[in-house]
Image 1 (cartoon, rainbow, N blue to C red):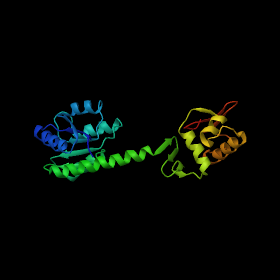
Image 2: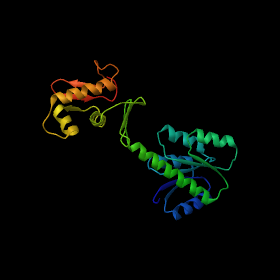
Image 3: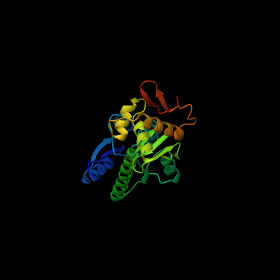
Image 4: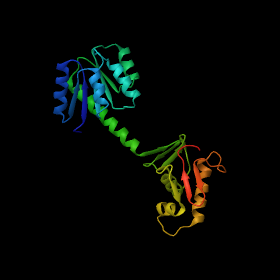
Length: 231
């Protein structure tokens, strides 16, 4: 673990310097913000692996900053710092989307351990998200080779799974039978009947009404189109 980018947000210079020194020793890159406004500017222009966020600041408190980040869809892990040890403060911070909470004073070794754990957990989570193709109500786990509709496991054969995965990876695109056969069967000699049979099977498994398909549409004279949502 090295080269992680950390943002330290605290209006006390000695704390910022102590944290910066500790993180640099761990091979991390550190940016600083001495107030809430500076922090928000940095967070909307740069990306970080973790934010160390003090709660009590003069211009904008840590809770407000945290709410703003999560409302804007910024999911960077946040470790909150506070000089107050009341349990409700911790509950509030975690409830607003903080990933962990540390009260002052603290040992730098404890903080470093928490920071590394949060970054590691975030990395694992991001990797798992990359292994999932999500389109509309459908979710395809590329590691387990499982496909779900509204969290209900769909029963596909291996070839059906390969065909539906290809469609999920290209929503809104029209493909001819030749293109589908080449991509999924890896053959140039196209069997039109095979494509029709497999499309019928897919519709029976994913459509609410297979006779009136909303997800897989036939484009007359061309081929098929997969929609991510019902049409």
